Length: 101
Image (cartoon, rainbow, N blue to C red; front, side):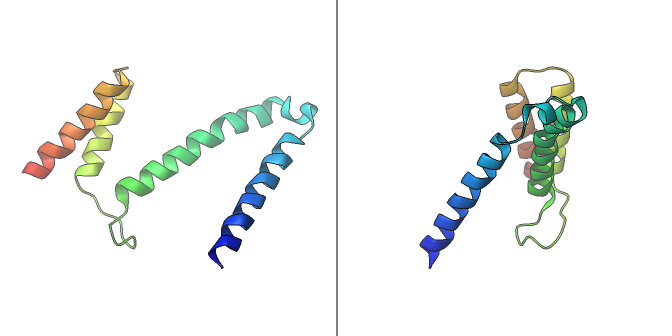
């Protein structure tokens, strides 16, 4: 039964990709559509990060812990235009220090 779900998901993904490729160029050339298409990945990534930071291990509650501070440190380092590795290690260090105390 599991293989049918995997195959169905694969066919669904292929059809979704095919639908995206079949959109006429005149529609994709519209500035509003282009702007929305540029912002969708940012919105999805932001939603995923928010869920991972605020979700409890059980998944049914919101939790404010060291991960929130680490995200805040990462945002501040990104606004300061720090290199990616500095952002990652800075956020990890902030979370480690908060969890230590």
